[in-house]
Image 1 (tube, rainbow, N blue to C red):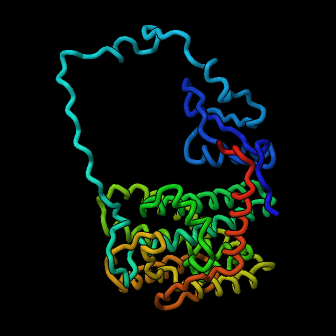
Image 2: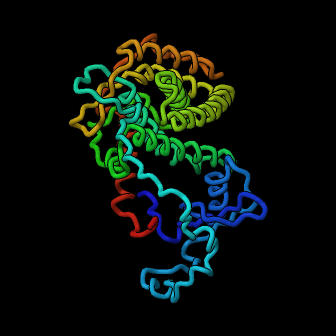
Image 3: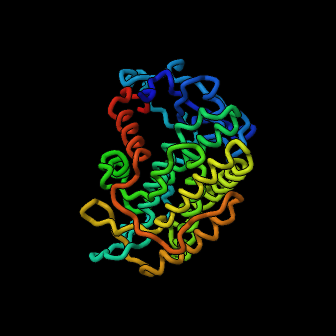
Length: 367
């Protein structure tokens, strides 16, 4: 049975980013042990920014207000002259012209959600939605491996990559037009037969296969992000796509390092060579997504180049996967088509675990 988090597992994180600045609440984390909570907070909130201070406090040790304290917290008098910024920030400038009323913005579809009625050929949105499924399962599988390392930094790296895989999966769906309830419903309410994961996902059952699969998935996301940026270089969603690409390239460096290590160690060389061959042989369908119809609640995208798009992406993937330092790749010469409902025990376990935690979650843990 999965560990069901309770309030005692939740820690609030406060960080100070510079000398003389305030200590701000930056978020919450869940950790089963206090000694790991600070390190997890550092990796989650301080991995890319320099911090001066980092405080991690168990939520149950904090004195917090409740809904019944509203009257106590309400100001008894209204004295605007005692508020910061009065009067300059609050005084009306009568000499200025009245502000113009802005016209309501036109509703525009994201560049990732260009729609059409006939979706016989897959487009960029279909490819992104399929990779989001792969990232979701990969993130869940990596979550099981955090405690497998003696070295704390390696364990944190595995956890960080898993967290970002889940975050990227959610971000991709948002860019494809999903709101948050729809994102949750897509990941937790679909039956396995409605998933369109790569056959690579079926192999994510042990660490050597996870290294090979993580390498292939990271390379595929980076390739598709690059192609998406080329399709519409001035799009407003480009910064998000670029961030996903850059972070997946960092992940790719980690996977390559682990692949080289597993290929070099005599104890793991044979096992990893077999796993890498099986995973890359299954990776021909990374860009073989089938069109995902409106009936499934998924926006269909107009294909920018038809079947030629999958061929181009597959060629780029082959070049990127080939530079990994591990054993020989068995990536097929051309793209293969994905199949609905595959994923094996890796997908089934991820769905079962996620639903069990959600259905039995302690009320108010993240409220």
